[in-house]
Amino acid sequence: MIKIDCLVAEIGSTTTVVNAFKLEGTPRLLGKGMAQTTVETDVCEGLNAALANLQAHWSGAALQYDMMLAASSAAGGLRMTVSGLVYEMTVRAAKEAALNAGANLHRVTAGKLEPDELEEIRQILPNIVLVAGGTDYGDWKTAYHNLLAIENLKLNVPILYAGNIANHARINQWLATSSQASYISLVENVYPRVDFLNIEPLRKAIYTTFEEHIVHAKGMTHIKDMVSGHIMPTPGSVMEAAMLLQEMIGNLVVIDVGGATSDVHSVTQPSEEYRQFHEGEAREKRTVEGDLGVFVNFENVLSTMDHRKLKTTLDIDDAQLTTLIDTYGYLPKTTLQKALVYEITKVCVHRALDRHVGDLRKVYTSSGVKMIPEGRDLTQVKTVVLTGGALVHLEHTENIVTDYLSSNPHKLIPASTVRILKDKDYILSSLGVLSLTHREAARALLRHTLDLEG
Image (tube, rainbow, N blue to C red; front, top):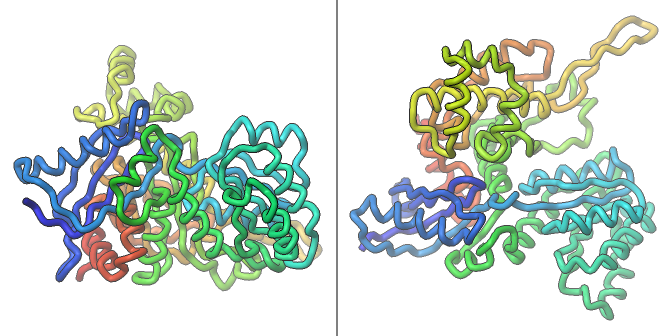
């Protein structure tokens, strides 16, 4: 019998990992089990296989654990739609909150929902619908119209209302006689006043709703029978770990390349020089690139690459490249397979950073040309953290980041001297969900996996 304080299951799009932790005394990782995610049949099969793989570390001994937590991005993770009022105001605030909580946004709308937009939402069948709109005691009609219109779709999925609080009384009155009462939750306004993003209450509401409505992959409803604690969207868990780490070491960026998506999380303040241009922007930001992944989306990434240059880099011919692509699997084994995954990972990182980081734009004024920042300012970032299977397990992936920094001198990027750390134990997303109940243990495990103990 092996005694374990906590198991954390990470159910990814391609791989399911179970991490076993000791939390008492000096927290440490005891072992890790892995298996391919069985999203086409029942994700519990992959989870049980990962548990069996973990048991194999102790020659099949039975596992006794006090609690199990989980993070999931299987079957596309948390699918959401967002409907707000003005795109650059309430829509932006709601979008930021949803992304930071780990959602994959499938539709974002501004203004009153039109019939074609409602039909598109029906076709998407999101896991959660978010309705925002109007600063407090400002415009209330648009958000109320959108809430009623979405309710009329009868999707039977959770609806979060995070708009003008002036609507709360009429919504509560309507819910008193509505069959949809159990599906609709009222949250603090995500944009209560101009240039103020109230993200934290909505992020927590999304976490809670995700836990209560696990329907994103075959068998996910049965995961709740095995898990005794929190279940979070994996990207949301990574963001929680990033925010905790920022408290410890300062401004940072976390790059997470997975099988289906590539996410960039930044927790930072803008520079004093550009602060006026980022008024009201959240300290935390996540961007997710659903077209950039090293397994589910590898063909998509490969189709955009220069194959002549790729063959030269890998030192192979056409026939060898064809064979390499035909035998591509979710876990590379040969040196050549790893080299190909490295090149695909490099494309994922560079494009994901391109879409996350801001740039300087020329503006012509009466006093001459001025450079105005546009987008996310990462110039104050001192640390870049690499996580995700490819970035953690392949060698020299730090060079992917330094190559990007050296080739984009005009972007709002960290200095070339930025510290680059690897999540060597590959537990960052586990520590995010763990931090919700065992914050100090998560801190200690972060220090160890990133070699920060000194």
